[in-house]
Structures are given as structure tokens and as C-alpha cells.
Image (tube, rainbow, N blue to C red; front, side, top):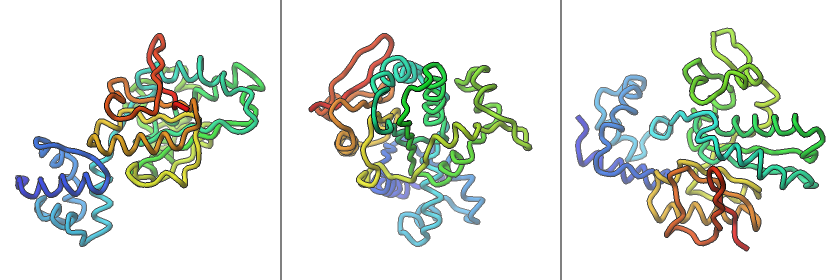
Length: 273
């Protein structure tokens, strides 16, 4: 049983450390995420494990707990429209750039989003030989080192591959592994650079981007931290730089630095001058 006082302290720790807001009724989520870790690290009491993390006595354990609480597997080509807009509307705008197009997948989780972006770019260049000659750089970040290691391997089981990935793309962009899984082919893996980043910290070392995917991420943050993240994203974009949010996410009351563009289907934002 998770003590209410301990849960409250853990919520405060998690928000301060990585911005995630759990709320008053997510004890079940903490239990489901941390109970497997309890056995791995040799603890026999969840409350004691959390107290140890909150007090900062064990940095390795702190990293393991944050990994467990921030790990979420997502879908390939989630919501579809951002990827349709990317290939049909946005990439043509960058065809004649003299420098690489830079795309950032923020909070990339298990890697499906950045690899989906890479597949779109690959398909675009196949259909338009000579386009995007300066290249495309895809940077994907996450706070979880465990997830980043998984992403870099690019290996997925059949269950993961069945979530939003067409048979045609599976044949074109994956190869079998000895353990029975499938791995993203090297030409697509090499298009993505994975880096560790806490969205509440500075983005200065990331450089500038032309397109940012920050989808289904802001929902986990407080209003103040959402505003902070959006301000930092805006600073990393040029005028008319492009931002994608999740289908249910909005900038209302959070930022006035972007212009909304409605499409059929979907929408995206551009940074104001």
C-alpha cells in the first residue's frame, strides 16, 4: 500500500525533477510502474524505495525510477496527419535550402515518432530524386536513458510493429533479427540522432530547428512549465518555423508566439516574427 504522505512527496519530487504532474489519484500508476523495479533493486517496501529516491541517497536508483515513470510506448505515424502534412506541404518548402533541414522529435519515447519522420523523408526523396540535397537532420530527445538505448537499437517486437505500421513500410524499412524481432534498417536508423534532454532544462546546446514535433508531451506538465517549454521551443525556431502538438493539445492561454494553421486534415503552428 502506498502511503498518502509518501505519494505526495513523490509527486512533488517528480514535478520538480522532470515536470511531470501526477495529480491526487495516480497512486495506481506509481505502483504499476515501480513494483517491477522494487524486485530488481532488492527493496521490499515501495514506500521505503520512494523515500530513498526523494531524499537523494541513491542517484542510480533515482535514474531508474525516473526511467520507469517516464517510459511510454507510442504508435507509428500517430494521428497520421502530421506525417501527411510533412511530406505533402512542409518538405516542399525546404527543397532548395542550402543547409540541412533540421527536425526535432521532443520526448521521443520508444522511437516510433522520429523513425516515422525518417521514413517519410526517405519516401519523399525516393519520389523526388535530387530534392533536399543539403540533407535532413533528425534529432530525437528523451529524459529516459533506458528509452534512448532502446531507440538507438531500433529493435521492435511484432506487437509494437502492429501499432500503426503498414505491411509495405514494414517490408521496406525493417529487417529480421536473430531473436525473432525486427530492426529498423541502417539507412533509416542513421538518419536519427538520439540525445538525452530534460525539457525543463536549457535547449541552448540543441541548436536551431526548422520543424519541432512536441506531441502528446505538454499534457504531463503544469501550466507554468508548459509555458516555459513553449518559450524555449520558440527560441529554437526561426520566424515561420513549424511546431506540431498532439491532436488534443492547445496553446490557448500558454503562448502567443505562434500562429495556428488549419489544414484538411490536421493543423500545425508557425512561429511569429
